[in-house]
Image 1 (cartoon, rainbow, N blue to C red):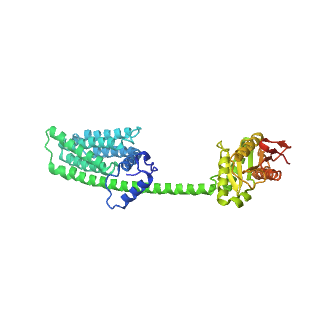
Image 2: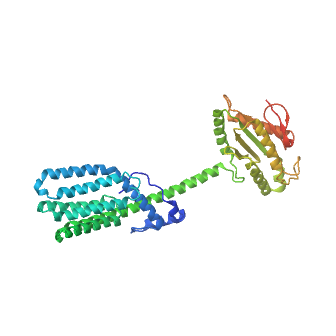
Image 3: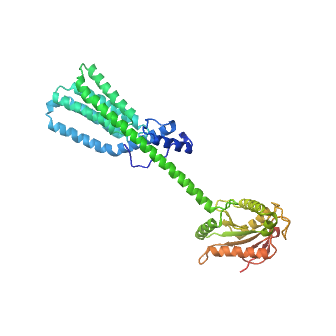
Length: 427
């Protein structure tokens, strides 16, 4: 018994690690004979899912079952003389009340969780009533009709209610034995030949159908979750590849491609909010000399240390640090105006200088320094992100041409900034 609803996730806290679970599911699917029990975590997940799916199907069809049951009862009452019905209407009404009780329970919050044993309990009561009823009816025709009803009821319990094999078997046998006990207490001697032809035969058919349905449900369950795990693996790999395509492998910062995406996004957001967007272009001073004399390995380590220092200045959720290419880096600050951008540039100059990375071949210091181009804009009509980039790039050009180890701002009048930096606004 299956439902069209999406398969809920496995209860992760009860399951083994993903790799072990994947191997376990594969092993189970390769077996030709699938047992009626998995490992503890997988078994719990299967039972929870199976109960939810069966409860959902029951909820969807129980109204139509009640209508069909009422129509069938009315048809029998119309066709069979009233005096011949004997106690049959009371038995039929009793089973109808059990179905109605199940329908009411199906609307409660706990029905999905306790579906199997609630339905199995009600089914066993119905079975007891139906098995006892034929022995209480005196009319032979109605007794035979009631016994045929027992066969139908047993098959319904085993094949239609969506119970697993063992709960279905308990409902069928427990209810049937209780019905025979009731008949014996009432002083009626069961016709064992009729009992075996109807009840026993029905149990064999219903039990086989319940076993077959559970085997199929377990196989589908394993296939579903194998597919879900393979999809999760593919998604994780795709996310990993996406992450790799967005980040620089040397420094761990974002790469230029990702920077371009974020710049466009933040530009639109600041334009919508009427806020400033600030950009810092950063270049490691005389890095070619550093690479030529200390070697590429030391050069890579230098870039990693500088990147680490810059990462510390991307503190807020919207702040963004990236390697732009070679020895160039960028820092993007949404919702940040010129004053704050200038202040940050000064702090960044000092932070990189404080790394004290030895550089005997620099013309401005005995350690690695940087030059920074700063610009800040409030995106408006006619302005594009390229204007912000060009402004920061031009400010960096001015910083490098005016002695390096300093910063320049892209617009305004001359301003002597902190730590040897210089504020220069060029139109």
